[in-house]
Length: 403
Image (spheres, rainbow, N blue to C red):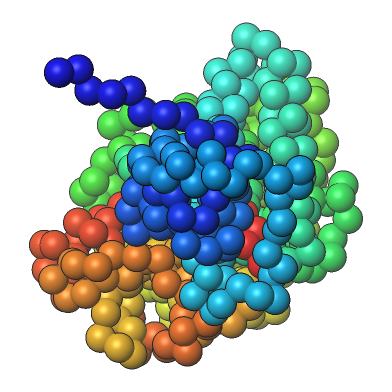
């Protein structure tokens, strides 16, 4: 016997008492199962927020016949939602924010790659593409007064374009906290996107070498700022501030950087911002563990004198004590990966699970009154935890808006 065709039910006809199935995978909604028996008005409102045109009606068709559609749906006041319902709605909002950050990050990398591909053959086109991307980054940054950072990834080793976008995000969020002008922010973003373009002039076998570089190879790598500024200068399209960022993004205030060994006041503030953002993002990929918390610790321990203390303090404040991507153990024993920074720096949003990898879910520590007990290393995780928490995936950042 042929299977009966599922009934597509418009969201306007949702009623308490019916059972429906969502046309979404489990990752894209906040309910435990796709099959939902509607028992509360809050469930209806939550389903309506999922950006789907219909659901599948599984049972309760007689309720629709006995209770015709009212002229206007009654929306449950937010004050009447229980704590559990409010938390469910908040988790859905956070999931959507994470997916949006991930999508925007990938789109930004693709646009940056397109700009890079035109820099020699169509420099005006490359500049237009990059300028459009900068405006998009600024729009995302300013969507709320208090943008947060979310962990994002391509699932692959970092590239020049991926690194450029991630550094731009870090540089812009620092610049916003410093209340820099829109013009300065545009220069920072454009400089970040192109800061490593000179590496494309470095032989691939040197650029991608895993083992320690020889002195000659290191000297070649250290030429990439000069290569980059030469490439951009030939176009005649980039201003002095952007070119300074490209040439001097490896300069440190203590004079130990390259290519010119500049110190403190010799390095413009915009370039100092990019130098710090670049240094931090580079540390995320400096070893196999890719731990953001370890990268932050490295800056404190090994590079504290290389950047202005005010800038380092500001970066710490923006990232939180536990930057997105940090692996932690919670006060209730579960293991977790930090996903989103929050106003409560000690209680971020995390993807958590039990010791055996079971019961994975997004948790809001500030609402649960759960604390982070300690930071853990990759070596402490079993195979199942590695898989559930995706501990081997490198960390990059993009703006997120959940509050």
